[in-house]
Image (cartoon, rainbow, N blue to C red):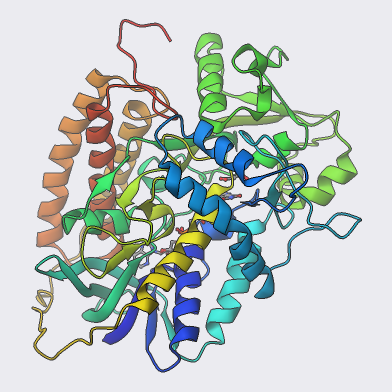
Length: 511
Ligand code: FAD
Ligand code: SIN
């Protein structure tokens, strides 16, 4: 395979870049490879919306910038924050021009929701399924674009490099297991998040950190992996393996957080109460649960206008109803769950990684926008702005054609036996438990050190299996997740100062 622009991942980041570059260069070849069906992504599940300054009377760029910096707890890159916030409205209008529908109020203006850490209402949304609407819209445009090819069920295994320049990837066709070289002029990693490393996550199954692991193996710079964002309000449901999110916009709509005694505890921790930033709310819930030996806290919506609630959050309303929770009368049980990775592959303001011709965009990248804790609804915004920056940068530089001189060794073609499926399942479960117990909301060096030792042993073991058995998606994902876990644990050990979503204590300190 040979393409001019290779994009790995079909969420908002990958699709937006692909659409722009393909329309700009209709004679050039754009290829998207994606490991599941084309719409499957974290993007598809985004609920709350996109944070963007639309209301220029109450709101301002400065307020959005300050909110982002405050949430990031002192380690955001201020230039990047300013750039993303001020470019946001243009990118949002572009999305609307492609056909994305965002809710409007009776005056015909965009309805602006509120979420934790925002000092103003500024979150544009499509009910509680904003990501689904965005994914649907961009995919429709992509599918209409003649020079874009989407290869579904194709798994990117590893980057192909020579002298710190990326020439594409090794890719496995998951339908038949064949492994090919895909050569590209430019490669864009848009592989999303890492939630499956924790198991208890709002992320879907595809979120295994493949792009970051690949970039790490290629010696790209990876940073801020210790800043794992835990969303405060995932539905507490012991009967389900999947974790359903109750959007922060529900608290923006007026829902209260209560402990089992019925106390609205958030004001004990922060003057903003339920609308403090996500790191603070999750850490406060953690403390409530530890102190009271409870399994969950509750979101109380019983005082709200339920027909309005249903109008704004139909999916959440229906999901609760299907589980027998009548939100007009009952509180919704919730717990924090892994939700987002603030760090990742280090990129500059044009999405360039430390490897030539390799870019990264979206959740797999570390741009400097989020610092130690992402402000709610700033992720879709970041992907929209950075995919545009990458497009503008790449389209202004000349495409260096791939010459025949660039030949790369084929993937070892030997057919080997299949790995026992039980091994993959039990090892993945062990990894997830290890990460939940040792690298969760509150960490300590002793636990991190013992996790590191076990992860190092697991990595050695899985690396052995990787060389011994036939390569499958699950085996590669497990290998990648162990690498991601090690990065999280090692970077957590290296950080000495607590900030944002990172909280490390000594055993002797009572939290
Ligand atoms: P994704 O959308 O995750 O796409 C990654 C793509 O890469 C997928 O297509 C995947 O299949 C593919 N891929 C991965 N590895 C490989 C591989 N090895 N080979 C080939 N393909 C691969 N953010 C907001 O700003 N606002 C919100 O309201 C919001 N709500 C959220 C709600 C939920 C439940 C979740 C999970 C996240 C939410 N987020 C929200 C975060 C936001 O949705 C994501 O950060 C963002 O969509 C990431 O987009 P992306 O394009 O970087 O990655
Ligand atoms: C949510 O709707 O609570 C998720 C928003 C986000 O992750 O930014």
